[in-house]
Amino acid sequence: MTQTGETAKVLIAEGPGMSTEIRDSLSRYEVISVRTFDEAQRALAQDSFKLILIDLQFEESRMVELLEHLRSLRSYEGVPIVCVQGTDRRVSSSIRLNMSRAVRALGGRAFFDLHAADEMTAQTCEYLRQILTFPSNTL
Image 1 (cartoon, rainbow, N blue to C red):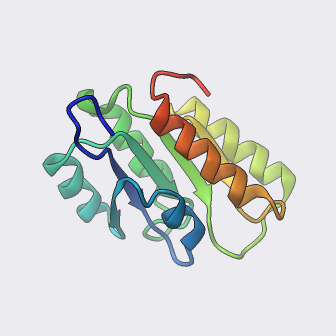
Image 2 (spheres, rainbow, N blue to C red):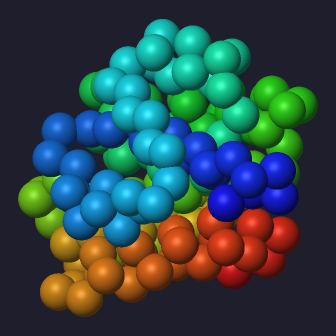
């Protein structure tokens, strides 16, 4: 909940196969899902989000483009952005490390490969809940 009693809003820029566990873990928040860059732009203009989650496979791998766009918007300067690899396709540890570095360099909070380990989705869900509970934290 926000200080005004409103339910915090979360934007999920989904790719194919986004984990339902992620969505379920955010069920106490208002989750808005978008599947295209245009939909994301409209949602960002209409609402104020407390967290943005972007899948690596968002609209033909436009995750980085959306992240850069978000960081160009003054109203989203302090909003945490978390990027995930949500599909069943496994990536190597070196790709995972490079994606993590790129996301952080572009102003994102973190990059998680939800299929890197059996417990990764649960850990990611907890991390997202902590961001929403303690938004000024630099988790």
